[in-house]
Length: 68
Image 1 (tube, helix red, strand yellow):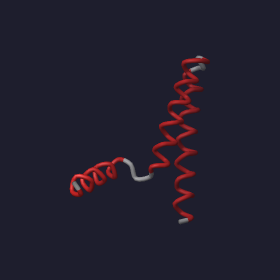
Image 2: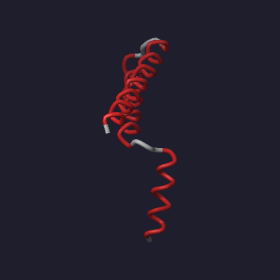
Image 3: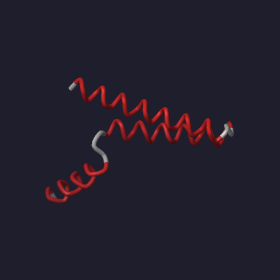
Image 4: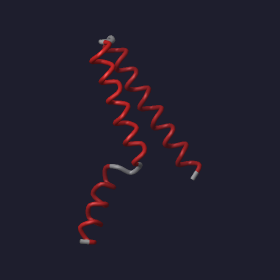
């Protein structure tokens, strides 16, 4: 069982290095998707919100990692 757990952790680690970053990006994408469904903004506005939010999340993750 320990070998399965180790293999699973390694597989997940290939795709998710920082769980907080991954979670924040999923939440941000869901929030922007919900906004698009409800408010129907222009595609350029929705794209800009998505891009800026992802960049901010990445910068926050980098700054948090730099402090460690």
